[in-house]
Image (cartoon, rainbow, N blue to C red; front, side, top):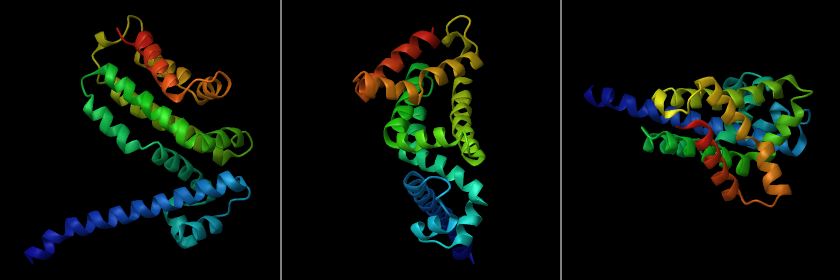
Length: 208
């Protein structure tokens, strides 16, 4: 009896890990099909086949084809190594400048590793409500995490006149894929140069 009870947390953790692995297989398959064929050409069946799961599993995880659009956000976060971002934020706890730099590094990885996907979503959202929802979800995830972290900073960490909402706006306006593309594709900047400039610019704009 003792062995059975003590094994339950392990089995539960194993099931959660397997579910997450399945979720990410579906997300990556959806990403590949979407980038290759567009939203209209991406069927739930094709995603299921590519992921090696049944259509029923795809529906169980994401609910519908429209819900599958949110898998694109999951895939982008995985490409940018969201787990590494969490570790960086934890390591810099109590250091606003360090946490600000961690956010910038995550966005740089996002644009560098998942930029193609983000660009297709941004373009397709004009005609596809599901992609508009996915775009908004991706934006919302970033804002929510930054808000949670910025709220832990003491008020004196911010420059005079910088409110929490203004800080979030400045970050979102500054660290944008359009800026990243212009700097790297048209002006010849390296990703490192963009990252360092963003950190310097935001530190000056937000931190006291």
